[in-house]
Length: 83
Image 1 (cartoon, one colour):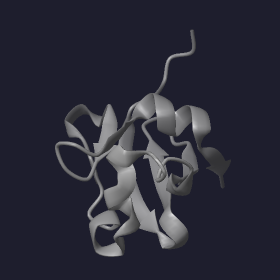
Image 2 (cartoon, rainbow, N blue to C red):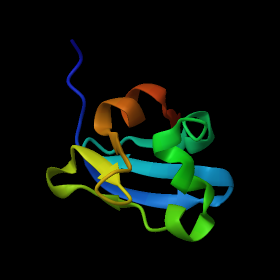
Image 3 (cartoon, one colour):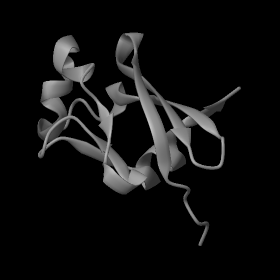
C-alpha cells in the first residue's frame, strides 16, 4: 500500500475547491463539490464556513469543525496534482 504523505497546508479556492500541499511537496486540487451531496458535508455549501478550513494537528487530514473533515487519504487519492 502506498504511504500517503501528511498535509502541511490547505487553502480554500473559488467554486468549492481546495489547494492541498503535502509534506513531500506535492500540491493537489480537491473538488469538494463531489462530497457536498452527503448530509455530513451540507455545511460546505456556505462559503464563509467553507473558507474556515484548516489542517488538523499532525497533518492527517483537514477540518472545518469537529464534525466536518476529510482525511489525507481522501485528498491524496481523489485530488488532482497541480504544478
